Length: 149
Ligand code: FES
Image 1 (tube, protein in one colour):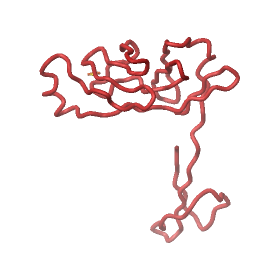
Image 2 (image 1 turned 180 degrees about the vertical axis):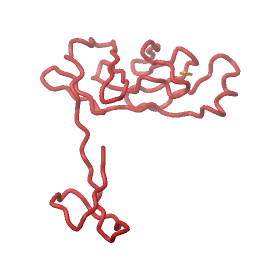
Image 3 (image 1 turned 30 degrees about the vertical axis):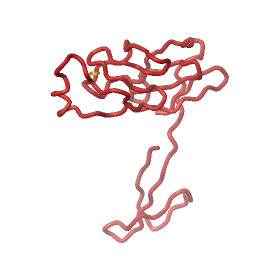
Image 4 (image 1 turned 90 degrees about the horizontal axis):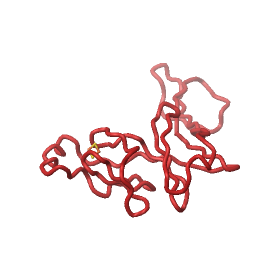
């Protein structure tokens, strides 16, 4: 969800609520703009079991076609930013980073196992604490894949 602040004596938009006042005493309005789904490709470009990388809306993402649908995650590993594009798939929906072997659930973005390779990398984890992956909503319409970024 994207948003913006507006200030003024009144506003014609009704989807907002006031939240305090500006220094001049004018009411401040918080407005939420729904993020737009962006077309990324035709469905058949990503067969079941495969993935494809896209740069859309200033974000670099990977779209996976799993057995039960399409899912999108951030392209860069949150540990030390290696590309997950060539990560190893395990268990049908887990992606493992090829550098330090952190594992993430593609559907939820949750960390399954943080960086643990090579031995001793855990010392670095003091500086690079565990983070989940960012995920993006995906929808299919007319056999086309759209991602909300
Ligand atoms: S860069 Fe991915 S686990 Fe370290």
